[in-house]
Image 1 (cartoon, rainbow, N blue to C red):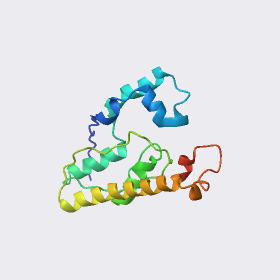
Image 2: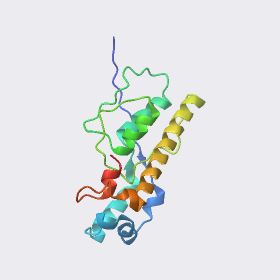
Image 3: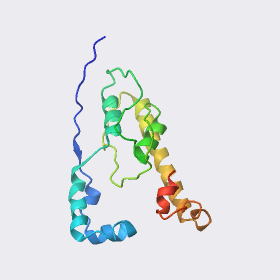
Length: 167
């Protein structure tokens, strides 16, 4: 058996919706997370947004979607760290691949490419349904956090309730 190793390009993705933000807007939206950041630190974050790369797990899934002629020998995506919450949930919903686990962190710049070339309609439907399921799960979790009746069960220590809501 011959194994060929090939590098996969990792193009930067522009997130136009976020790149026009100001430090004041970021501080207002971020609450306690950005209250201790200086305007220069926040501006640095804003400046990086148009240069954001997709998470490696998403890059691989999209690569295999766009190259259906390549045979996948294992459904396991090996990374040097656990997947973020959004990658993990998307991969679980999509059902084609597996990862080691999830570190539960959320990244506001997480994205999938705006355009993906799929082999057929079934593959496209699976991808879109995974995104919809992820979106619905996030919306449900946010509703729970906003509900005073359920919010208490997530705030178990000094960390933000959002950290616990997504476990």
